[in-house]
Each structure stands twice: as structure tokens, then as C-alpha cells.
Length: 342
Image 1: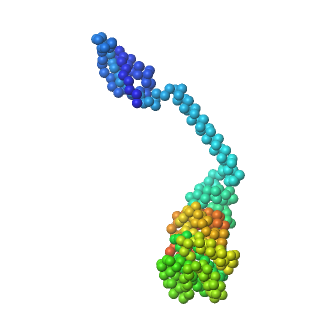
Image 2: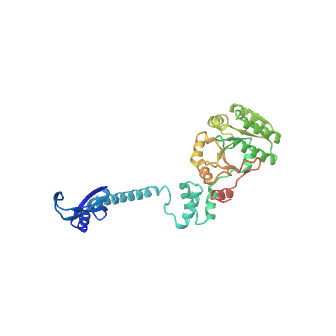
């Protein structure tokens, strides 16, 4: 802030001097009567005014206009760059201009966690109605035929730690038992006492065999030995997912009788879940399933991961209760779920 004193024969004269030098935005701090003349030797009253002005207000009009012109130049340049980006992306994303009616559908998909690029493509193909939106999603999502997994020799449940593999496998064991399908249980998770205890309890209720093994190399003998009598359900530890995935690929290369089911936590965001998926031999996975739907607040990731993995969905775990909280989904149920319905 700049401060200066001005002396005039009258108060008006002093104010005129302030305005001339500091401009109309100057602030008057004080005024007082003084003696005019050099060294105050004249006995004529005068008025001294102390005024102040913010330094930024002292920018000359020419400088202010120059700054304004520079800002306008930058804005025009930015506008040109945005236009260039739009034209560059147009061949990749079919349209960047969404009709007013379709904007509502697009915003709905985004609010449910559908990836923006997928949302753009869905909106491009859908008409201006929720029913049309559901039909597009139903066509995109693959669902595993329920008979294909119950008739397999073995189902191996894989995925990261905490995804709910043991609990989901227990629910599926009850489901298969209810369909009068014989099952036997195998666990590769020999280090977690809680997991083994849960499977022992399950084997007692279903009156089926439970075997705990340490290495994937022991698995082929068990599966081929019992395949004719029952379907073998195999629990695996999440902490060794990458190694187990690699070993399974070596011991069961292209075996159609062995179904590998990868479990995903529906509360995870798409990028985190995809990183886990890519961390193992994902090319050997036959089907995906989602857990903890009761804890998720949006379900767009189900669509994202279905498209990104290219695998059909087989199960949805809807809560912690064994054996009840599990569902074999159909395309209509999934489409409703993804857009926020029930």
C-alpha cells in the first residue's frame, strides 16, 4: 500500500491533488490544518490530507489493457486446444454430443459407477428410455449357464484375500446339495485356521469329505479319483493367488472339466479389481463371480469388469449368510442392478 500527504489551500484542492496522483480509488486516512509556505513561516492556513492506495490499483491503464489482452489470448488458445482434442477423440468415442434426453441416461450410468467410455458407447446404442438402456446392457453382459458349472468335475475358487472365497464356496456347496449333487471339499488354504474350521463344519453338515492339501500338484490325483462320484469344490488362499494361478495353468492346461471361478469384491473400484485380475494367469479363468453386494453402494463395476475381463458371470453373493445369500444371476437382474434398480 502506498501512502502520501497532500497540501492544498482548501480541503477540495487537497482532494483534487489526491485524485490526480493516486486516482479516484484512493482512501483518505486523515486531514488537518497546517501552515502554508516553506518551513511553515507563512501565517496562512492550509489543509494537509493523508491518503493511501493499494499498489495493484496503481497499474496504468495501458498495462491493465495489456494484461487483459494476454488473458484473452490464452483463453483463445485453450479453446482451440479443446476443439482439437474433441476432433481427435471423435473417431474413438462415437459422439461427444449427447441429446438432452440421453444426457439423463448418461448421467445415470456415471452415477452408478459405469466407466465414462463404456457409458458413452451404451448411450450411443440405446434409445431415449430406461427400457432401451436395460436391453443394451443385457446384450453386453454374459451369464454362465447354471447347468454348466454343476456338471463340471471340479470348481476352483480363486481371487484376492478377503474376497469371500470360502464363504461363497460354502453357499455353492449347499446349493448343489439341494439339487442332489454330491460334492467333496478340498482346501489349499492350509495356513488359515479359520478357513479350515469353516470347511470342517461345512463337511459335517453336508456329510461330505474334506481334504486339506499344501500343493497344487496334489490336486489332479484327487480330482480324477473322485470326479465320477462327486463334484469337487476347491478353496484357494488369496495371499498365494499368483503362484497358484500359474501352477493350475501347468497342471490343468485347457481341461474343460475343471472350472476356474474368479471372485471379485463388488465394493472395490474398477481399477483396483482389474489390477488384481491382471496379477495372475487370468487367461485361464472360466467365469467370474461378485461378492459383498449388500455392502456396495453402486454396481457399475459389474458391467465394467464383465466387459474388461470378457468372462461370464456365474454367481452373486448378496450377504454373509450361509447358505442363503447367493444368487445365480440372469441378464435381466444384472441390467436392473447396474442402473440402480433391484
